[in-house]
Length: 202
Image (cartoon, rainbow, N blue to C red):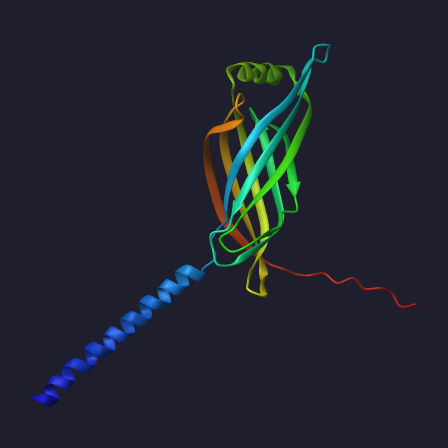
């Protein structure tokens, strides 16, 4: 009777151990699997608009933008480039390129920049002035973040690239963002291939 009891208990203990081990492995995989950085438009301001009443009629626009990159993983990030493109009514006003910086594990890094567009056409300038009078302006932004991941003193040989496309509604009175509807594109990873410069022998 005792032998039969041992026979039935041992398989149950074995199954329990394998189940616990599987759960632990899945939890570690979930925690260690690198995810996309959380990218948001922190601020987008219309700093200056200069209207040209003499033909060709148009306007010059200067904008300032702040992007916040949040690292949600245990890995640190070395941002190689942060590129922010801004459009108004389908017309590209320009883009800001920044070398980024270091973002520690679960850290946040803001990236600031300015865009100046010269010669906005009369039709778009008219719509922009009307929106400024209403104190609400719609912009479309595309943000691309390129960088490298690492853990402790080790850096991984792959480079990630995350893209964020947003429709942003800006309050020009208090320079706040009323709303932003964003679409995150999947993070792509490619191998990092360092280059080495060779000098010709004398």
